Amino acid sequence: MLSYQHAYHAGNMADVHKHALLASALDYMVQKPKPLSYIETHSGRGLYDLGGTEALKTGEAAAGIGKVAGRFAPDHPYLRALAHVRATGGATAYPGSPLIAEALLRPEDRITLAEMHPGEVQVLRRSVTRADVREIDGEQLAISITPPEPRRGLLMIDPSYELKDEFVRMPKLLMQLHRKWPVGVLILWYPVLASGAHDPLVRALADLESMGDKALHHQVRFPPARPGHGMIGSGMVVINPPWGLTDAAAEVARVIG
Image 1 (cartoon, rainbow, N blue to C red):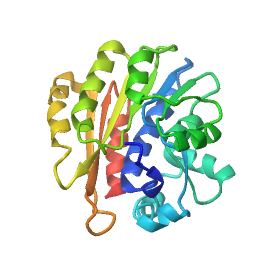
Image 2 (spheres, rainbow, N blue to C red):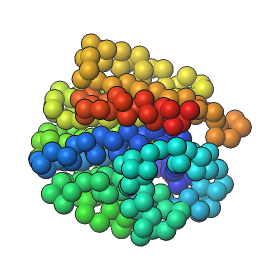
Image 3 (tube, rainbow, N blue to C red):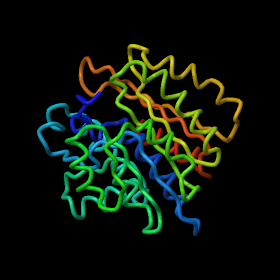
Image 4 (cartoon, rainbow, N blue to C red):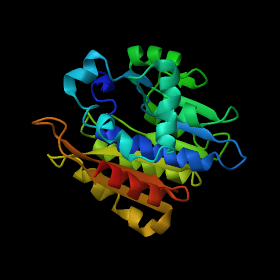
């Protein structure tokens, strides 16, 4: 798992799906005058360079945010976060979800981030200046910190899925956290793979249908970023989705096309 480097994939179509929905959720949540907690289990480095060697090598950013950025409404919170980061990081800077959260949250909101890769942690601490960054297993952090203080908040689960058992463990973690923190907005991202490796995760989440409007399961499909690339879509599961997120998901699906 520590071999995964998101710099090769930053800004791809899955990031567009993931980050646009995250931004929409946070944008709604900060409209209420109550502080909130933001927790992330697999944070990465927080800041990426789409003009860097890694991004240019795969071309995934060009096939992702580079292709569809102009299809979003100019005031979409995802584009606002992107503009905020690029104002200081330059035109090719791209925010991971920790920086999207920092761009949209308020000073009174609390950010706690977990990341296991030592090199990524160092960059993350420089990139997200007002977060509690912990070099710790994200699953352990999530279990130990929930319910957080403030109790109102959002938790993002976004592993690399390099370990195949993550497709089994992550839905179990999601439901365990929901039992511990029933009022929390809990988000789980997963890749849709041509191999079908994600199918056990989807089957494990079948019980979400009984939760009605208290759960949102949204998938988008898109062409492989390059010949032979196995990811053909992106999935997001949201427990306790903020108001309007279903409409926001439909808009992201339109943008991705």
